[in-house]
Length: 263
Ligand SMILES: [Zn+2]
Image (cartoon, rainbow, N blue to C red; front, side):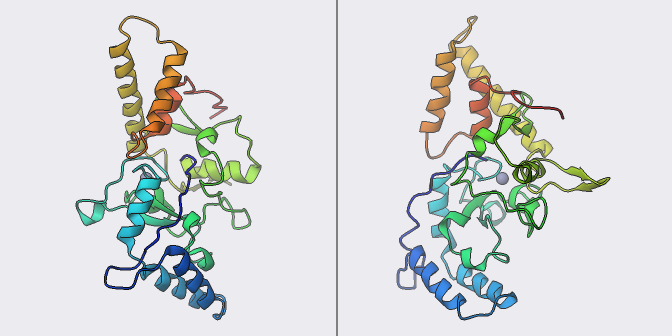
């Protein structure tokens, strides 16, 4: 996960056979309708219907651009082409059930990969929080997840000890990455971002950066400025960004394994 800069919400989210309507307008109409409905299941149904009335392909196109073509959680590359089961999900960061008023809110919408065992697939209907009383993890428009999450050179993700986090956010973020033990019981990870396939893919991303450095600087130490310049250049690629960009940057800037803390 990394910070995401949101642009303007899409100017037309209507299906092609309907009059154009911006997301802002659709959200306004949705919230007006919602205010006349009592809280509870009916609001959830209403929010679902408002959301399903949008042209998802148009949402996906805008989100794909915003996220540099990467999954908001695991950073694997997304594609809107090909088989139905490979199409990325338009994901509510805060669930539609708990936050029907935010069902059409642009800062609450992201694209997740369709992997059934990680990211949105692992999260399901759960809140991004350790306990029911904890607040959910903040939107990635608000906080620098890329500064909070570190990586080992083997591709494992961890919450950095130098991340300035309150206890609730720290334990939720840890649960987002890994299964956790609580009173002798295993709690399944919220996003499963240390699933074996992801760890291996991140390791492969590090290896590809290493090979490129070794090719360009055979038998010599690469100056730190050069490594930093390369990390910066990766971010400039905009769309699509290189897969697993955060681990590439961590490795290039010699941050892998830093501030890991006890396992
Ligand atoms: Zn993902």
